[in-house]
Length: 400
Image 1 (cartoon, rainbow, N blue to C red):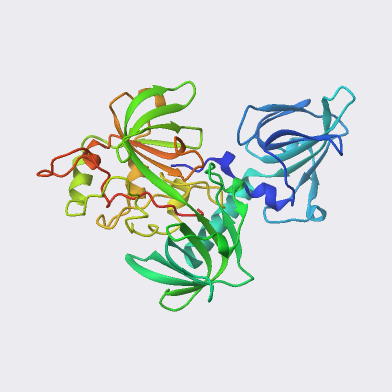
Image 2: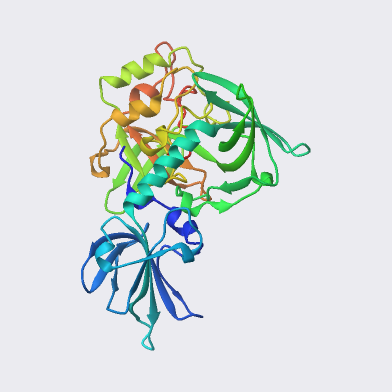
């Protein structure tokens, strides 16, 4: 799927600031800040859409200053002065305004800009870097003594065990429990890694890619849930499903970052045949607990990866196919038609990829895959309820 520029998150780190998304007042400095994407600009205001929440209108006047800073820079001294005419729709901006005695923000004192074109170039560079020097997979073992982590990774078309040699120089980040955005990922450490986590590593690999010395490690805990739809509230973006593994109801939250794909009727039986011969999963087990395949394919799957999380480069972490597939399921999903929540009906069978949130009764969908009846039905000759087959596994794939 096309990269959505609003998902670009490197702006925050690039200007070395820490601000909340949307409008937030800094009481001490009596300033207000708006961080997001420009959707409209005129002589008197900028309309800025934050990553979450409603758009904000920021007033500007002749005293407003404009600075453009390149992606990757952390020093505003390296910014260049620009004019309002240089600010375009799609640019990423941080607007700062003074708060008056009426507690309302006045015209912006400064607008810091990262241009859409500069961000796109940086994303492409990052994508190529992760393709060349990155590995991804599911953690199978951790040795705290030696600070080594073993994970199953896809190297070319081969799946192999890779050992990560951690060091104090490596940066660790971890996805928040209830967020699919890299911008919400927190600084982490080696101690936060867990067996079953999915992980992508950027670093120096040995000749046969069986060992890697990391520079950046991004990890998270994710799960796949199969269910049947019981109700849909398109207005609130919520779907209630019956979890086929636990036999309990579950609320699935769908937001603008969620990907909704439907398996075409003619593709479903073909996909089901591809995974024939796999062991059907026991109810209540997740793909990670069943030793699912490592993360699939190169980082190129990320910007269009239908099953993926928000990535450091602003794309998504793409989906991977399970151990019997032998193909790139994320590419198949890219070709599947999208649908709207209003099209989902009670009784539809779905598979939902999500982060492991804090509330067991609610999840936020990374990907909601409809038309999943052929994948969730036990193979012919096996009686019983639908079960999520072990061969189907939405793996993450960090960085575009």
